[in-house]
Length: 430
Image (tube, rainbow, N blue to C red; front, side, top):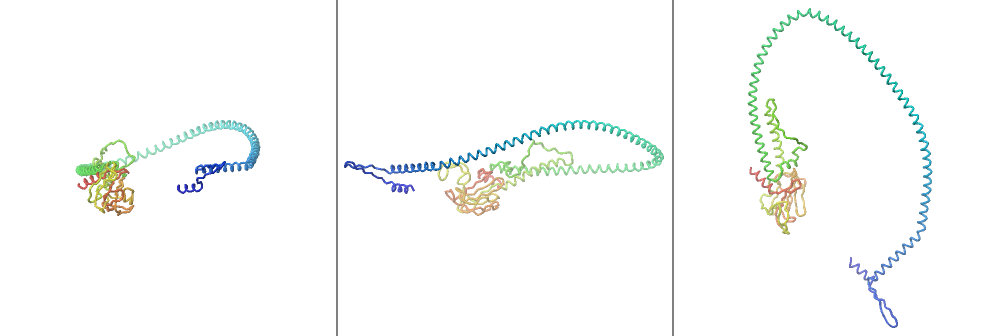
């Protein structure tokens, strides 16, 4: 493009010479390409300036007349606005005068209302006092009537009671004999029931002790199982509580001081307390088992050799120091790559320097990556189980030979895969 532009300038402005002849002497003036371009530019600028000034001169009178028309219209609008303001001022004065007149009338009505309210309060007070006196008189009259009726009823009842008292004494004596007989029978049954209760309490104590031993053995076994699972998690380099929190097994929004449960005084109270403790351990055991099934504790290859470890290393291509966030496992070309834990395939395809790659989400914030593959054997969204085939070892991407680049990621941060494989050996050994 630049070359074509130079050729165009050369054709339009070639180097020229102007010859001058004076008194038989010939001389010439040399006009270079730069001088010709400068003269052409000056001519174009001068021509543009003349055109601009001419147009401004021609349209100057039209612009002035347009502005004068706009000023005349603005003056007419201003005069009209002054007239409207004058009208509004007159209306405002009239409204103000009406308000003053209404204010005087309202003050008079307020004074009359105040006087009327005071008279009404006085009348209500007198009426209330008279009503209270009338109610007191009515209440006193009713009370005296009730007293008289009660006295008459008591006299009639006393007469009737005296007549029936003799008859009741004979019946009471018979009932008393029957009550004594029933009491003796109740005492005998009570003693028998007391012996049965003592025997049942003895049997219950024995059963409770047996159950407590069984619960304590189960609790001890559960604690040992929990400790073994926590040891495996610790071998991977992860924090147990963070792993459970990522899975959602730890309740959020709880807290407070720890106060051990005290057994109540009811039967089997200690057994209930032991069962509550066991229930807590069982819940933690179940939560740990759930996350343990999601930990990638196996090797992705059946046979391999470690060609590059996790961490700082010299780059195999440019020989500079770099950080290696995975584990390189050397293996024969097209060796089968297996899933190291159950999960869901979230990525299959080419990923820059990783080459062909498969990524599996195992849940609880844990993912694994399998890179430099020759071929992928799964699709995105596919559910995979432990040791399902994911692909074949290859040499794609930034690679110097046939191997598998294996990564373990927890909550978006890379972890050392060797620690997970070492922890898996501990599990499978047990």
